[in-house]
Length: 509
Image (cartoon, rainbow, N blue to C red; front, side, top):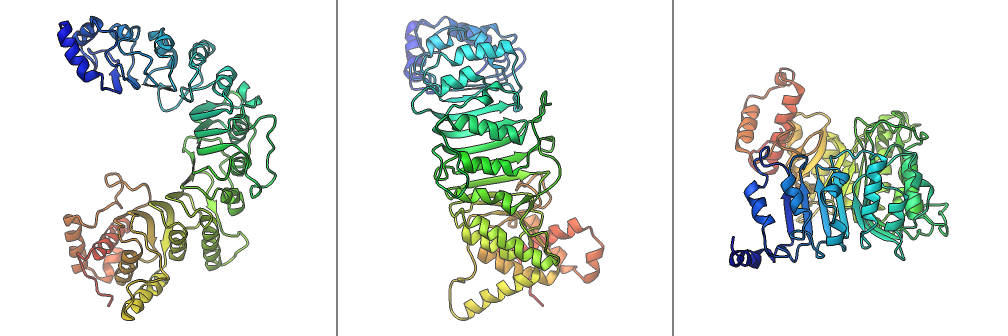
């Protein structure tokens, strides 16, 4: 290429703010950069081809790709305009070894992420030494996601006055030396802790957010602490423990948050536990008392709790009758969600006792902004009949709205089941759902995906509607026992959704 041709290219590339560089060997990956492109770039007469580059994304292993390293040792890509570096499928020490002049060419980096896979491992001493040396040279660094950190890195990140961070994602073991420190972060947009125990999460939270002048509030309903945390994620580690932390109940997670985090700023809480994780003892329940500290966070827009080994029990254990337990569970659920009127996403995935239709109504009424709701709901036909009659009476009286029933036109999926699934239950159920959640199109026992779950069927799918009509035309009482319960549920809910859309009509009698 001539200098004139390079200048033509520069007239376009000077507008580029993000570059994704596939560093894999072109002999192995068809999407990698060809060798002739590397040769041309290495001969570029311009000092910098991307003068406005803000974000560099490097992906792939560079073990056999020496041509990629030529780019990472020049200022063709690397310049003082760079603010964010994102590296995937590579360990930090490998990336830093390929780019030894990184901090010289890019002194103003604010965000750095580098993960080899989705399960961050603990680095050895040599890797941590190179990581510390590099990160501590970036004076404006505020977002870090590159595996385990140490005291020197955290001290560097929090030396501003007052200390504030963007996104901090870090795996933490109970033996991490930095847990004994106090870094006093006053504001952080997002904190994700991959921990080996509940006690480790509590210690990490206090070490990061408190300092020697902090006072822990004795009650979650008292004055809010000063740490402004907007989003927090609790992710249990699946790595084997070298030193096992002290076993603690899940309620410690909630009390630690209420004690250390400003109640006026936290908007998102995600607490998850994979099937492979064993940091939470596989017994016991999450009771309403354990969850009560979360009531202090009235600004929440997202609350996602998914603990496989700890079902959420909202009813009182002393209740002997199932009806009493259902009523008390719905009442406790109502009291809980009423504290979060701004919720847009809610997941309480392991409810020991599913919410009733009345409980669903209470959640929708307390949280009118909900766009995603993942709680188990089991519908009783008697409650459906009462709700359907109120709709009919309101329409008969000439009213266009039913004030006693909520209305949510955004939710498209629910984890909902019906207690009986009889043919004459379809018409009132479709009427109630059409009024309360008119956009509802799928229901199942898991996440709302069309391809991976047999309960996820679209009501406007012509094949499903034809099958539903065929099922209706041949239905009789004996059919209920001649097909599997799964097949029956598929047909039942397909007809419900088709009835909601007006594609079929099922008369109650």
